[in-house]
Picture 1 (cartoon, rainbow, N blue to C red):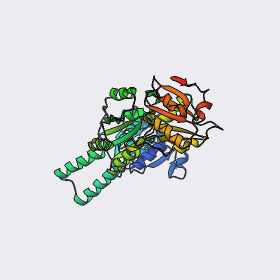
Picture 2: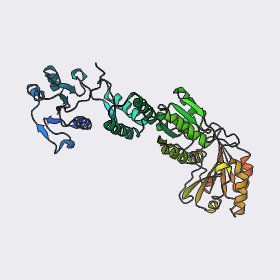
Picture 3: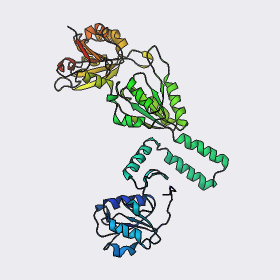
Length: 427
């Protein structure tokens, strides 16, 4: 079998059949710029209604219908007809669907980016395999290739075939255009809360830049896949990378034509700086795809036996951060603690507990407001301490960071829900 790809131009094409499979082949031929004649014993798919379909009797005695064509595609499902077409073959190339022994040519699974096409073929062995490989290719090839192809076509039309120096420039442009960044939310800690889409995307990565709160099990998966993995941890008092440095690192890797995974704990949309990173990369022409993850705020609440919403108790959830940029304490949400029918989940609150209690007292918040601290969410050492706003400083002494802080009546009203890890209720 030859592996030589061919592009047929102005070919005379015959499609035999008018059912669901023939519909797929008809669409593929049209996408390739070929307008086939269609002949069938009857129309079996609504797609062909109203189209120019020649209805005739098909069989071994009527195979001369193919003699005037350059390419014949038999999607009739009649293996005897396919065998007859192959045995009597004149000057046409033949494709008999699902009968590779009668095929001169095979349909590939095609990923299209404007005028750029990438075809995957299994040589007729398994179209499903070819389609899955095609779909994987489409995941990591950036959409910006379409505009690059168009621009290069216009340049060729104006200037003719590129010179050696110009070819080098095109090669550099092509390499840069292939770079792509996936911003991936990986859940709170363990691989059990990793989404299937995130796991599938790991297999596409050349480089992974990993945040501090990503669990070791996620690191292990990345290492097992052979991905170049680097920590870009940012932790209070131990900051090793600034956001500008991480942005530049992603951009540099992308310009090398690599596929980069920006690996984040939880969900990147919840205080994960997804806007800063995605907008920076997009501004520099880098293709970005963002994958949501399970946020520690909701996972931590439910896994510790707290339902953030309960009919008649809590009608909504507010997720806030206890600090702003440069570890500045965020006080804007404190008055929300007076909203009796809301659950407030506070992230990055561990080191601000004393200031939260003081601010709440200053704003007249009831110190008996139920509260819970959930530390080490989704890890074997997860612990939940249940008490009140007034005892928060006592509670924080019994757990470690990172921890989420939960306020509201839902904390005590949902105690009957099963929980994982350790749970301590203050007297």
